[in-house]
Length: 483
Image 1 (cartoon, helix red, strand yellow):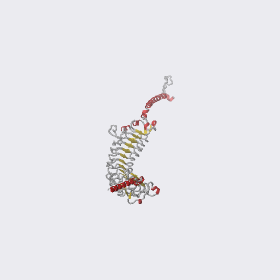
Image 2 (tube, rainbow, N blue to C red; image 1 turned 45 degrees about the vertical axis):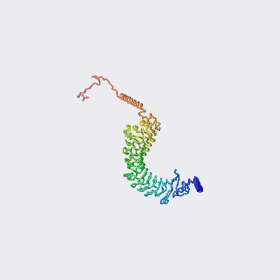
Image 3 (spheres, one colour; image 1 turned 30 degrees about the vertical axis):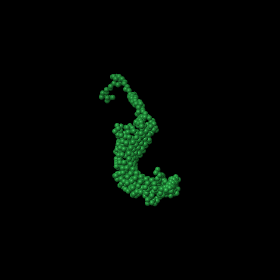
Image 4 (cartoon, helix red, strand yellow; image 1 turned 90 degrees about the horizontal axis):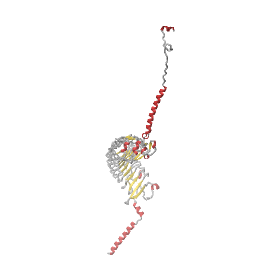
């Protein structure tokens, strides 16, 4: 019995020694085993401290391996500017284990490679020559969250092009040749939050197309970018979850079909001459409105910004022809509290604004920053109210009058904001009196000159009688013949 017990103790001791030997492995060996991944067609892990592409002139990409807090390896593969021909790809490219990011931009691709990777989250195949997206090409990367297909030559987006990408949250299709999108093309992307379609000729396609109802976009979409798409109008009223819409540089005539909860709207570069009250609907949650680089915008009309009670940031930078803002642009009864406004930041940089009407004072009470740099400001009595707002920081340089020319707006004291009529009223009164005196003196002078040049009458008394040579002579008719 004792022998059995001793044998058991001996076996336990041997196991303990083996465990200690395993735990005393060299740290460098432990680190090497942590980054061990499956060899792939893209990476060359035998030389992890080198860049094989640059030194050996082969087609391997730059592969970086990092350990997560859980001790699992994460692989990020960068193939940018590596000219990988279409023949380089196998039927399905098995990505290294733990690959979360793959960048295939600017690699000369003409087709979408078929990839397989259970951990891939970010895929960039932009700036290539891809013309079509085959149906169900992304089914083996079903956990993909961000997909960049920008700056290719894609013309049509089919219904099953994004099949299998139920986890997709962001897709960038900007800079392509897309003219049409098939029905329910985005219905597979159930968690899509950001959609970028800028720089595509989609203007005629969206005339009678509802982005949500026809294309299958869910209400989880929060950011929509459709700049330079030749849009004249767009219907986004079904977008209950839409928060940001970037629709700039389109020939928009009006935007009446926008969701009420929209918080950020960018319609910069729109070719309109005046922003009317009918251009925008009442957006009760709008916080930021971008109206930059409006080429022919001359004025903001009455009630143009009415119905935007939460608007706090208004940007008109670069609208160089903007010269007037109507005193009632926020409504006529702002000062009575009937029209609510929370404007905190107004940017008028590079505009042609010279002055602002004092009727806007009630709307500017809560404003903290007014940027008017580059505008030809007339710092006279018409802008004194703006200088006297206690919490407002105004940036700009005065152009007129000459007394404050070249001074920054904040350096000019309130009493220096004077108009010519206020500054020289004494001289004006003196000039008026002097003019009246000159007129009186001139009148007197004219009268005296007239009397001086008028000829005086000369009176001469002559004696007229019978013996006077001036006496009347009567000649008889008969004697007249003798004479």
